Length: 125
Image (cartoon, rainbow, N blue to C red; front, side, top):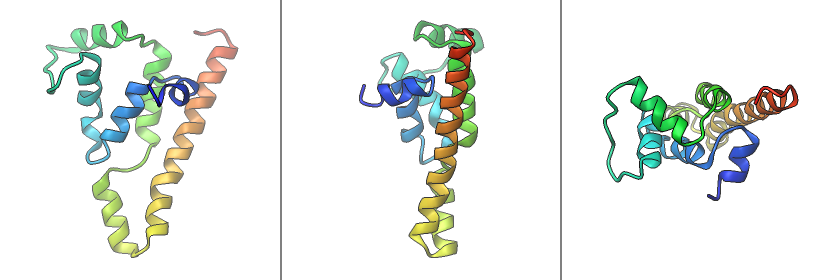
């Protein structure tokens, strides 16, 4: 709920941002974390296929714009912790490591906000 206002500006919801933050160790766990949060489960759940996943997402208010902004954020956001640790080891600099995490995340936020604003402005959602 804390992340909801910031997420709404980007066309996402608080669960999505939470899943990305919790997915820092490995980006491939973002979607399972998100499904687990939406289904109020305490363990990773098996979805029987794309149709089931689609129903879970739609039941939680996802639109085409939510999906688009989630994809955009997924492609542009901070790298996983292993990559960040490698950057820290190679550069021996906390500054470069922070920049490697913050710069793509800032770009992701700006692009998602712009996409959301343009879609709203054009009345597409």
